[in-house]
Length: 471
Image 1 (tube, rainbow, N blue to C red):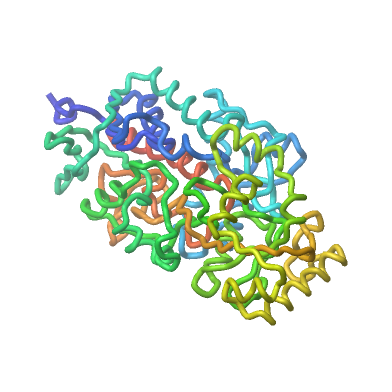
Image 2: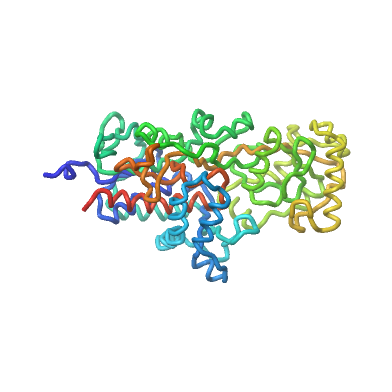
């Protein structure tokens, strides 16, 4: 009997989110004996909590709309944005295989209507494919596909250690003090948003917002994968790679859309970005401001005239997001003193501690832009340009504090193999999803990049792990 026949499994996948379920499905389809261990009570992970948007180039939806795009263009855009903060060969494979991964989800029942395709920031090539049913639909379809394979799924099972052999590499995991052996391990346990020590170590920018910071991802995301990989000799990369979304902190829930109709100023009373920019662009601009703090300035007329986009209402009904800029919340927070009211701009500046002259000048310049119907300073769309002119005036503090995606973790190569600091792969050890530190980079690429990298590299990790087991 060979040593391989003595193993409990060929492949053990740690984590039952989008990346983990995908990896387990592909390893099983390669004919391997597979186990999936999930720390929580249910499968789905952060994928089930997300909007499910998938970032890809060269897709059928793009072609249907006459949009010319290629994986090579996607790769060039990511490298131009993130440079050496990502591992280029791994990013190239992601770009080359993202469209196929999205079509594979389609074969499982996830629909990506061309009508839901959008530009991630309203200016670049439309690559953000929103599924009907959002991330929950992706999780449901993956769960169904997994149930149709001979995969042993164990919930409430948290791996404590990866077993390593000096020559063969990963040979199993420890769960509840007991070894479970295999020939390859895929780490797909999510990020570290629920681990304060790892946030302090890996995401220094989060410290600037003080006690405002909080995590919106899956509650089991406590950095298990990062710790397990590091204890196994992996190089950990991706410091300060993660997405912190701006929030007024009215309630601790996911809100990705701020008031694009208002004026946003920093602690100097100066405008610093286009208020209708992509959510991650606004957040990164906010990170660069003094103390990572800013104020939304508006009047009652602006607030009462704002209308939510129909897609926002759909996402709200599905429980994917919450919204703060609605009358009920406005009145609640005004009564609590978290929305500051004043009869004049100068009085408002005094009440929030901004230079009165600077804020008055910013409002005056902004109002002039609204009269011209063209934002020559930052390029804000004409439909969102509204004057701050009718008292009373209001101010709300915002900070980049909602931690949605962490991008630091194990370094992997283009085959999803976990690598040591020397650059050499650790035999039998693979990773996918938020556990990976080689793909996200310092700047978030755009809406759908997290899901695309999780599913695409979940496929890569499952396939490569199965292949590493031999026939």
